[in-house]
Amino acid sequence: MFRSILAAALILTATAAQALDAEALPVPAKGEQFWGLGSTGIDCVRLPCPWRGVFRIDPDGTRDRPLSRHDMTEAPPLTADEADRARIEEAFANDGCVVAEGHFEGETLAVVRIAGECHHWFPRRPAQ
Image (cartoon, rainbow, N blue to C red; front, side, top):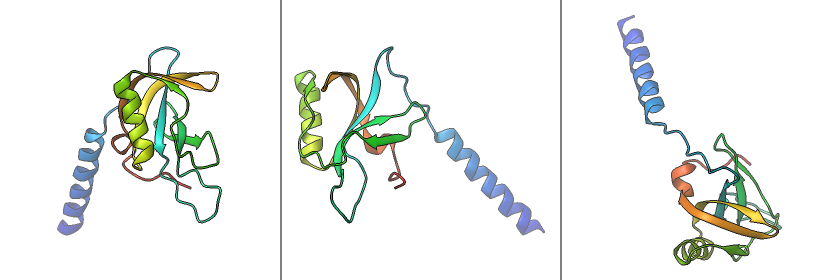
């Protein structure tokens, strides 16, 4: 019985520690949205496959489906400062992924800022 109580206490302690480690996601500025740019985390066995692309990040932190069903080998048309543009282009070229805050003006993504790397926002691969 003591072992059962000890095991339950250890599980509860580990669960509580994980809950404390979870940080709330930032809130985008009014009129802006968070977008994942680069590797989508999706692995396919048939084409077309959106290995790289642009996907919306929902307010609860989940990834939406990529905007294109096809692999995007280059970043979408965008307006951004030089450093942000370079990070986005590097993500597409090197199987990386960044989270950008911005909005679409037609087919052009207007990037306000880079909010971080996708692997910090999404520690696990998306469900397929």
